[in-house]
Length: 215
Ligand code: FES
Image 1 (cartoon, helix red, strand yellow):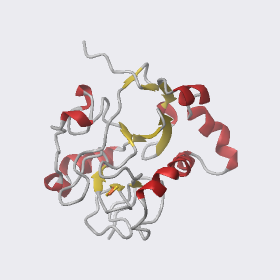
Image 2 (tube, rainbow, N blue to C red; image 1 turned 45 degrees about the horizontal axis):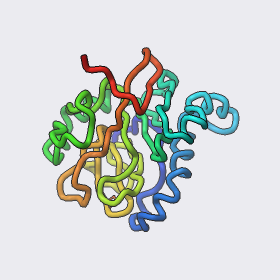
Image 3 (cartoon, rainbow, N blue to C red; image 1 turned 180 degrees about the vertical axis):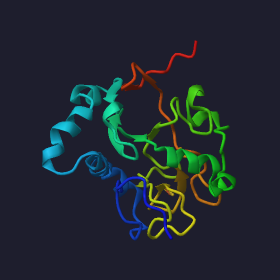
């Protein structure tokens, strides 16, 4: 029997497996809005969703972007824009973390320990690729040719096969990443997804674009 998905969040169907990377880029803002929409449902949730967003000014000038991650439900993901790029913020559940640590994918990952240093800051150079286990932050662009991968947290998700552990699927050429953005072997993407610089200002406020103090 298939496991239940950890979240209802999903950005699309994998039936559209082939598309143009440039077209993907042009439409990433639409994807961002769609992903953000999973945090709440319908127009009634709009004030709540808006409260998660960084200011328009911060997004426009490319400065640091602050986000209240305390309001992201377990298993849900939002997208914000930083320096013109879509940035995912996912609150991973204990079940997601368990699957990443002990699931069968561990032997199928190209760089499970984040050895390629260019893909994340030093403080995210660990198997979960994050400062806090439950909060994952990544640039939402495939490391092959820059398409926006689909968020597919659903285990054995439709169209992805019985061994799908939940993660990100790139619709352009089929690259697969786990929920830490770790790329699998035998796909076009050469490296893990990029983790941007970030820090926590307090328990809830995450700031993207400023490095976590390591001393
Ligand atoms: S852009 Fe080619 S697999 Fe993602």
